[in-house]
Length: 181
Image (cartoon, rainbow, N blue to C red; front, side, top):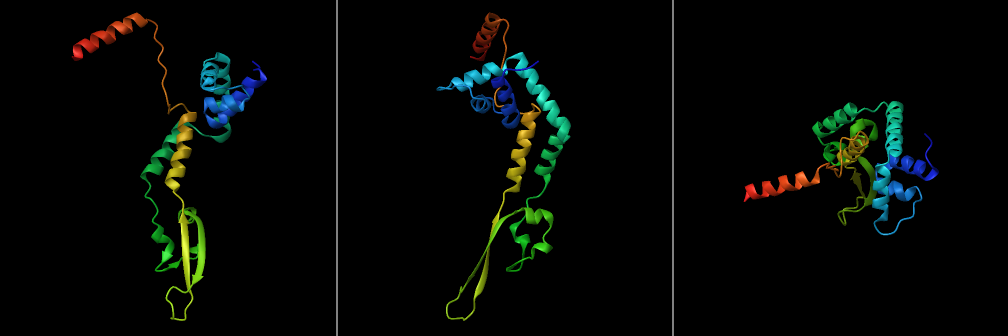
């Protein structure tokens, strides 16, 4: 089934961001106030949109080899691995040569500033100071895993409840409140 152009763009953007409201805006729908939330919610309930998103997710999973099990395994591994220690980048007071760093140690480095200055006045020496900026790799990994969990529908921001007999539910809730008192 072919979708209209805006709905096609909505699905494409949704598959990238997994954010319905952002995809709604990016697809070119007119928005005022909270209309983007409402419009995105309505689109997400349309069977043809649901089918197009499912087909897109299946295609992406097939192309990348990603599965829910792999995402969960990566999450487990990231949570169990020890955090790197910035001190491991140094031999005493000197930064190790890059060739001596492990891949994991090198991946921690966001940047290095080398500053030459005289730290102790009147000693006649120029000191070299390495200012190392480290990355929070665990945070980066966790964010990537969060996106994977969302992709496979294993993580939701909100849940919808469909009630077929609202009167019976209201009566049961009222009875529960009475018992709780």
